[in-house]
Length: 135
Image (cartoon, rainbow, N blue to C red; front, side, top):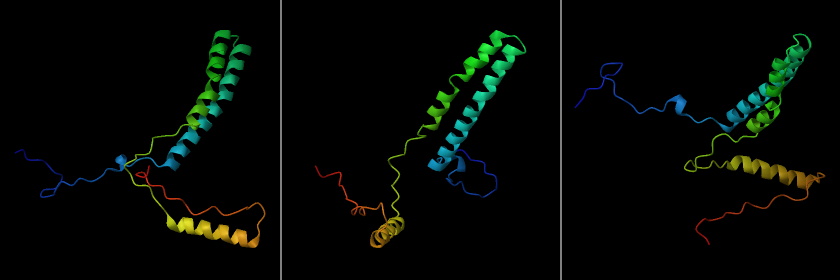
């Protein structure tokens, strides 16, 4: 039996979750994709400007062509990254149901219907419960 070393004598080893094990939230993922999109879209104009500078003032058509070719796929790449969906949701994690939020939504819809707000045709019906086992 091997003896494990611990930072403090007599301390017990615990299975603590590291903060790095925490999954990235959907909001954090979307924010990251938005930043990458903005950076890539922002790089297109400087590359086009460098292409023009290299051709007009430096008279280097090869360097100008390289900068221009780099600028062509940047919008496409930024849109593909921005439209990405991050990591797929783990199906083993339970879905979170927030009844208070649903009740607030239902009350606001009822108030809008009673006050006759234009554009609101009807409140949505109660949610339908679907069992997986029923065929």
